[in-house]
Structure formats: C-alpha cells, structure tokens
Length: 122
Image 1: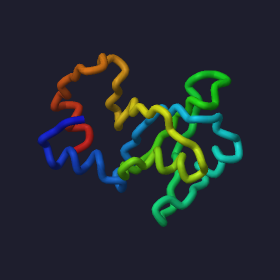
Image 2 (image 1 turned 60 degrees about the vertical axis):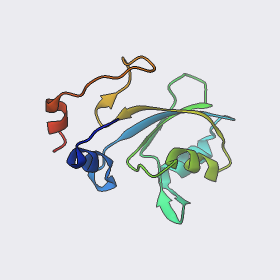
Image 3 (image 1 turned 120 degrees about the horizontal axis):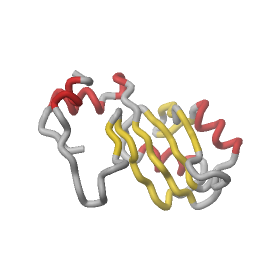
Image 4 (image 1 turned 90 degrees about the horizontal axis):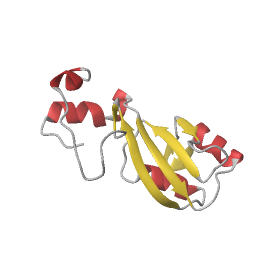
C-alpha cells in the first residue's frame, strides 16, 4: 500500500487499532498441531509476547501452506514468528490489509483507493 496521507497511514499501521493483516506462508515443512497451538497462545519474539490471531490452511491437507492473521506489523514479523520454532518461510504473500485485498489485482499492477474506503478508518 502506498499513500501520502499520514493520518491514514498511522491509523492502519498502528497496532493499537487492531487492523488485521492476512498472510499466506509456504513453510519448509508441515506445521504441527502442537506448534499451531503455541502460536495461537503466544510465544516470545524479540523479548515480547507475540501471537497469530488466526491460523488456517487454505489448501486442504497441505500443512506446509499456512494462512495467518496478525494485528502487528513489526518488520519481518511473520517470518520471525515461524523461525522462532524452527520453520523456514519459503514464500510469503500478504493477501489482506484491513479490508483491502489483492485478490483481483494482477502482479505488477495497482488500483486507486477511493476516498470513501479511506474514510472508514479515519
């Protein structure tokens, strides 16, 4: 997301506003049930308790492709979360930021955000 609206940028990125970010991660190995529970309860990353608010599997019976929802936007947060329990992220794709999705935007293209969409956050 690219914006020159400082107020909007602050609102959507500040963790206290609980704006959801959704990612699809491809891991080097299948995510175990035990580790999934640890991520949902919370683990220490950078000396702070961190957790995924939601974990799901977008492809049935493929536990190497993991969807996660987070409220935090710390640098490389998702990669560091998986790394903390010994997983390597092979591929990571943000699919959603708040109500904005990339579903119908081709790679290398963009779309303009209507002012009415911005107003929902201000």
